[in-house]
Length: 233
Length: 405
Image (cartoon, rainbow over all chains, first blue to last red; front, top):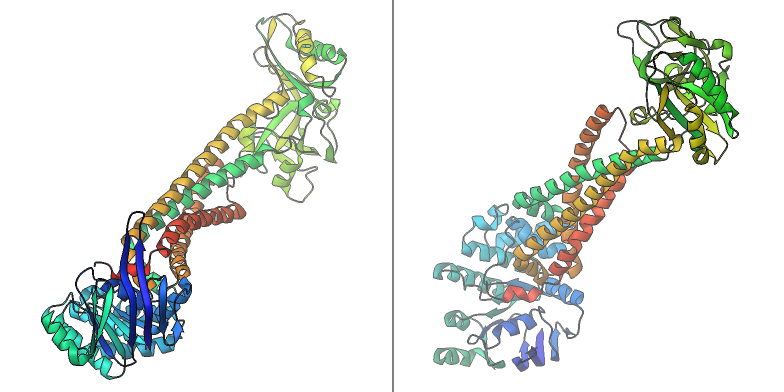
């Protein structure tokens, strides 16, 4: 479903060249729940940006659903983000001016769906996260955990190829983090692939598989050994 | 693009939205009013005078010696001046074209509540028609026998027949013939009968400014006193007016006991009439351009501020699938909605301003096409003003969403 081959990302300024990712080879299969961990500055965000088609890269190939996204136009990358990826951010990134219904509606509108289909999807997604009764509330009227659940609803409403979660519990207290994590696991159990970047070892351990990034290099660890690696890190 | 999210966004940012609407409405109100006044003013600029004013000279003498016979002097003046080669004709007149002297109300009835119609009365002899080179439109011309001449004190009677201009006839009688109709030059005055209608000529600024430039009456009478003497209007051969002026003045100095109070080519009189208008129109237009620039910069500033405030939100939209063109369209549509509301309010403001101005000036300043063109101009300026910050917004990288919160 997602395959990176020899992908490198270099940030260049007049004075410095920073190798944020070095020759990454990675394959994530449909239905997996993968955690991505690594210390600050290791390249996690760069990996997230490339995996989410938020940034372009110069070297290597990145196949998403069998199609290479390398060198695609900005508009084409927008379409891929819109149709194939569901984003969940650490700070939720809900649009504060829009009620929950319309927040979940944002990516669906860019997809050009009919109003009827959008409404059905939005209502279903908000029901899934348990906020169907509050769809006309503004984000500021919700707790952090509820806001993140709205963000999850927004991510799943378009039925994407995979969810890309960036520290989804980073801004939540432990109880809310637990609820959000359970929700993600529930979504994954129904077949949605999830890639989750996190600092939280406990959360990472709950994934099927852990990918560690150190100095821009990826080590892909199967579940059987992941727990040991995380424990000793 | 659906506009519902834009409306929802505006609902949450009422202050900013109101600020932009007020700015646009204010600009529209002031801009369109200024442009309407300026264009109306400039439209009056080149109205035909209806007379060969470049070939007409005006002389205004004044007696200081009370013992002189004014009537005889007038007879002598007209005789002498007509003997000057290149002087085609001359006539005494109590009023001068372009100066709106002797402005009165004329009535169709004598009742207390009878409506008055603004006009300028030219009291002159039968030569005035030829001096001003007017043509007969209806009825007949005045003749020498129609003219009442004499000293004011010893000549109590007044001319009972008048000629009126085409516009005057239209205002008073519409499509009916004016010939034989009775009018009153004052409410308690004797009635006078219209015997002829002549081609229009411009009377002066005060009437001109009220869209009544060509309403005039010629009354065949020449009256004088020691302190009140008519002007002289002389038509000369084409192109000779400037060269002849001194010769004409010299002729008038042949009469003793008086001096030439003023003399002028009617070409100059017309220019004086328009001088103020040009400055006023120019001032309005300059103010309009300055206001337009300020508004454009203001809109650019407000939009740029919004873009800076909403960087993360714009990045989020991009991350969720918005193309650059979607972001551009969002800002342009949002601005268009605000502009439209501002323009509607601005048009209402303009209508009330122009209504008030029209009431005060007695002149219709409203012009739909000018109003629509102004609205279109303001719209284009707003689009341009939003274009650059919107472009900047569209270039916000979607990766901004993964940077620190």
